[in-house]
Length: 333
Ligand code: ATP
Ligand code: MG
Image 1 (tube, rainbow, N blue to C red):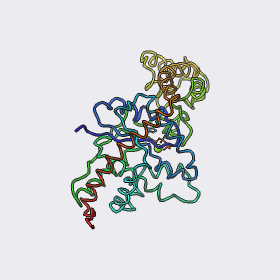
Image 2 (cartoon, protein in one colour):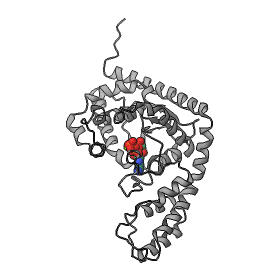
Image 3 (tube, protein in one colour):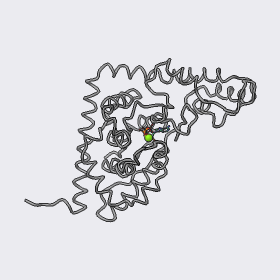
Image 4 (tube, rainbow, N blue to C red):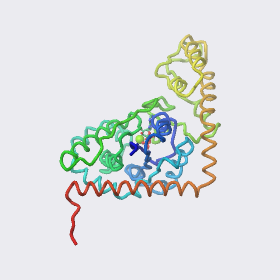
């Protein structure tokens, strides 16, 4: 049997360049080698968007379009809608007994996200405990490999601890997953912030039009210490150059721009125009495939339903083993 991949995204909006370099690129590369499940995590999206559930349906569709646009092959990869696999909720409940409150409180990513989100009425239990449900997502599929961005490492570690605990306590049913980081473990935002993130509005989306990409690039944060194009500038920590490094295939051009930037012989405008050109040619074929599938919504719905059906079958079979291991597969007649 092929080894499995499970990873996913929250349908809080369409996907962006950070998703591509952090995770999507690896999914596309490995889809023929691994039995791949991609979870559209709508239940997790609700944990901090429960006041706007009406957006989820459309967002699920948009995320599926992004998957197809970057080249995930629906014949190979199963797109699974989280809320349509109720077994995940059951496993989450069992896992809750295996994690302490103190461990959850130490999770650095959740701490950071709580700070960002500024929950007015306090942190919802659902949000605070999402690492547990994420461990259920990964382990119900018995995933070996989880392609993710750097922010997800504490979640994978949490999942591994739960698996060890479960297997020791009950029986060796679950698989300890391994994280696989992308070409860029954490792509910064267009605002120079540490992470491009849907919730922060500092994104270039995979489905953005040329004009939108141009606007977002031209208003990007650069080197704040540089006032005039003749000032020597900083390349390190400058997101415009980070993006050049990742998305501009013309390495000689990037090196030349860096050299001139450091000397103060090139302006931000030229550096950004060249970045726009590189990004636009990277995004053009993605945009085109996206439009093709967007014109066939029925086909996209079928792909989602078929993936979810196959995903649920795997989840049901794991849960049979889980209940047996836990001695709660009662045989009352
Ligand atoms: P939200 O703001 O709603 O949390 P997000 O932009 O963080 O959205 P997620 O759906 O939480 O996106 O993340 C999906 C996957 O993409 C995860 O594996 C995550 O690590 C990865 N990812 C997201 N943003 C980046 C980024 N800027 N760089 C690298 N990987 C990223
Ligand atoms: Mg996130």
